[in-house]
Image (spheres, rainbow, N blue to C red):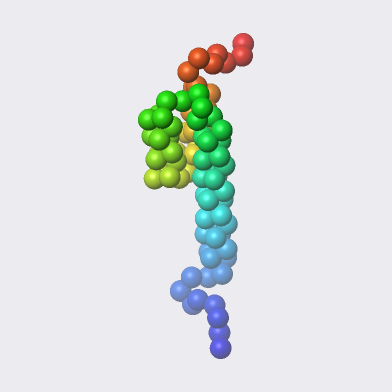
Length: 79
């Protein structure tokens, strides 16, 4: 009995599986980072970031890791 899908070649399956794993890992890293930085954020802002990361995993996670964690109130970036 043949186990491969005739409509979707194996390389496509592999690529989509790897992309799914990367997306989940990026989301988990962003949520852990948010959890560590949540003390410096208001509860509503932390909730908004968490919702963005979960609803739009790739864009939300990249936005948090790129901009959000650096924009904590009361913390100045180094010169």
